[in-house]
Structure formats: structure tokens, C-alpha cells
Image 1: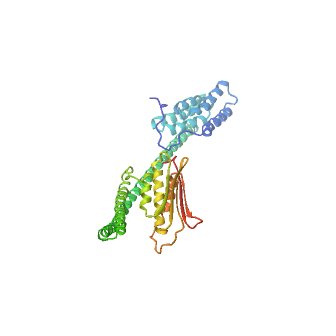
Image 2 (image 1 turned 45 degrees about the vertical axis):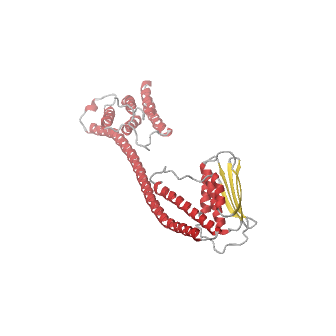
Image 3 (image 1 turned 90 degrees about the horizontal axis):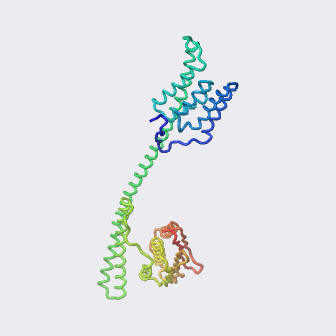
Length: 381
């Protein structure tokens, strides 16, 4: 294989394609050098000097060939800039000593045994020794600078690779910590919440068996059913929290859809009127789930803060958007005590709607009630 074979593969991130200015600048100043040196020379000498400058345009693709083409002009007309640039490029692009040393030595020999040869060239005196040193340094300088430039690029690429590796390790460590913390929180949530909900279910079951009041028995049965359903959903969500970090594709349990809204409204225990007309088009699963959670959170808030108020639930299709509206009238009486809330329900719903490309607004109505409205697009799921 010739020395001008395909260039070696560069590390990721290494600079490869020179900007047009950096490509043309050496050619321009080499043309100036050739014009000054060969000003009164014959046409063929001017042609050799011009050739040495022009071929620099291909120096990165064929560095050794370009160096050889600059040697005639250097030998005949004593031009420096073109061969110096060629030697630098050979060292930067082909850093092997088997290539750099012969090329730099060739330039030093051409510079020392310059045309026309004279007896002074072979004289053993101080001037000849100094000129030999000058020729060697003239070739060694650009060669060393090219090797240094190549080394700097390789070190920069290695440093960039190490930085990316450290970032990747830090990200993996953070994910591992997150998985561990998620598992710990899942265990604590399961231990605390499941214990309390189990006690509620047991007490409701005992009340259902012991009471003679049909209304109380029905209420106790409803509480027990809700407790059992809550425990099932809690176990499913805890399982997702404990496995989603290890298996990102861990399947979720069957999620609620728009078809489950009538049962949700019916079991809320509120005086709710519903108008469910989502249209005939199939809505994305994420949109249906967001609509269900919106109604669920709104009904939960009404149960806590206005349990005696009239409630209106409306789900309708508006073109490619699904609108969900839950509004309660002003309650006849305010509850003396309300259940505690985390304050994150509406915030989570708003974030869910934004992730889908929709909006969610919530606030009091002029009549003294409260309204939650969500617009969810069908274009993103």
C-alpha cells in the first residue's frame, strides 16, 4: 500500500475537514513566496514554483504526493513556504516515523544540495556545517510541529471520550440510586397504606355483618369494595415502581378508560349529572387515561370540600380535542372537617395535560362553585 492510502480513522470528535479559509491560506502565501523568489526566473521555474503552491489544496488528501510535487520548485527556486507546509501536513496526517522521517529528510537534502550545485556545497568548513544545520532544522521544525498538532488532537479526542464515559457512569449511578430509592419508597408506601386500608376494609366488613340498618350495611359494603379495589391498585402500582427501573418496558396494569367513567361517577356518592359524548373516533390511550384521572381527581376534591353540592360532569369531542369539564355548584353547607390533601392532584393533572400537548384550568366559578376543565388533543399519545 502506498503512503498516500486512505487516512487512518479519526477518533470521534476529532477535527477533520478544514475550513475553506484554512485550506486556501497556505496556498495564497505560498503563491506570494513563489512570485517573490521566481520574479526574474524563466517561465519553467515559475511554473514549478506555482505548481508547488497550487498542489497544497490537496495536501490533506494526498500529503506525501503533494510533498513530492513541491520538491522540484524547492530544488530549483529555493522556495520555502510550500515545502514547509507539505512537511507539516505529512507529520500531522501520517504520523508514522516510517513516513515522516523520509519525507523530512528528503526536504533537508533538497534544501542542502540546492541547484545549481557548487564546490562550496561539499567543502568541509564552518559555513557548510551551519548550512547543513539550517537545512535539518528547516525540515525538522515543521515535522515536529505537525506531530505535536496530531498528538494534541488525539489527546483532545481521548479527553472528550473520557468525559462522555464519566457522564455515562454518573448517569448510570444516578439511575441506580433512583431505582433503590424508588424501591424503598414503594415498600414504605405498601407497608403504611396497605395496613391502614386493610383495617378500613376489616372494620367495614364487620359493620356490614353486625348492623341491622340496610343503609348502613350498603355503605359498609361500598367502603369494603372500595378498600379492596384500592389495595389491588396499590399493589399494582408498587409492583410498577419496583420493576420499572430495572425493566423500563414493564407493563402497567389495565388502565382506566372513558368507558369506566359511568362507574366512577356512580360510585362517587355525589349528586352528579353526567353528559358523556366523546364521539365515535378512537382516542389515544393516554388521552382517555388523562380524562379519567381528571374526572377522578375533581370528584375526589368535591367529596372532600363540597360533598352536598350538585355536580356536573361533561365529556365532549371538539374536533381533534377531547374536552373534560367537572363543575360543582356552591355547596349548601361547608363540611366542618375536610380530609387532608397533598396539594399535588391538580398540579399532576396539569403536567399530564401539558405532556399530551393540552391544557388544564381550575378555579372558582362566579356562582361560588368550582370548575376543572381539560382540553386534550388527539394528535399526541
